Image (cartoon, rainbow, N blue to C red):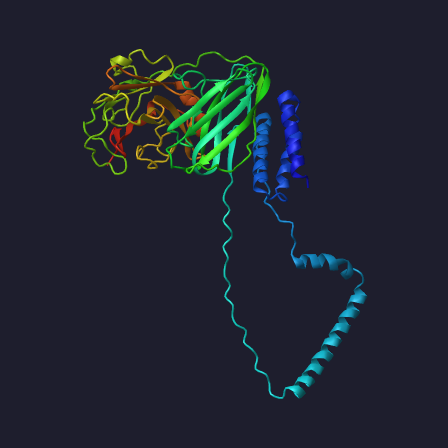
Length: 522
């Protein structure tokens, strides 16, 4: 069996070759390494080492699929302790003797039987002399078997890149997500990643803040992003630091942040974890398995710059809308009316029909303030409010959920959250205001059926708030929406079948409040 350190050395040698000479990497050599790593699971029981081996399997499994479209089995073999039971050891020691001679064995067996017979007869006679009165037989005390529960094994917290291997042509972009798995009471995160800016460029996803920034994720759910910057002075470096509400923690798995990468020239770059630190709700460090680095390769090739044709609006471009009644903001938990909701929450009307129909590229019924604001090839969503958004507002979220094929059985299951009792939505588009950062933060989220969670898309929408502060507009590339949903959920966008609902979420003091449009069905 190959030792753990030898496997790590082989993995690193292949990584170096892949970075220096991508086309020279032998796929069969990679297949052999995958098989060796799988088999090594039988003899390696250390949890951190096993998690590292799993990361290697994911990395090279993705590589083989990218090169050959073959899906390799990448499960690590179950650990089998090497201690053998005593009876097994005895059988191994006696095996040579038992194989020596059948005649000697037969003779020895006869002799043993004869000795036992004589001993029994002599023992009976001796007991009749010494113990004329029969000794009562002791009844053995029954013992109750107690099932000892197996010890509870706490899952090891891991951080990894998805995907770990990215192949680009010069000019192309791809999104790499930083995932945390099996987090326990996680409150904050600090990350530093290095890359080579000569070959790879990190795209800015904020749109408004100065400098280059990556996209925050949902674990931890950041109320404060203390640092979010990309520098390229010498070596490229990504620094991200975020925390949720003090004293709170999150359990489970999710995306910490997303990075949009663009290939520059032929070559490659690692995405190297220089520093990773997770902290729980008490400020204590969370132990994690050292993460595996990612790899980005850039090949020479012309990028197709032909604009994607815009979907032609269907005859249903005109949607009859009804005005939502004023004063119907309710508590998030029960829907009970709220006497004094925050300003900028009560929806008057939005770009959704009363039958939850949505026209993504409307030609009529658009507020005058937004006429011509959406660019060609963008979808347009908007909300009109009864009262102006305060400046600054409390934490508030203006959002749309979109069922892009009109099928309630695809996308996020109905009833998981309150907004979709009658929708199976694939995407959420919105903008939120966070008092801790003092900024409006647009977002585009896609439902991932494998992870059963919303994950950030590769881009964020543009947004606007008009001078009266009663109109919120959102615009996003239709092609980005269509492609991202198709790749993540497998759902194809059907323009004439799109449905959705808007909501505004905020806080009245400590209580979470919300208004839906259209109202939820009874």
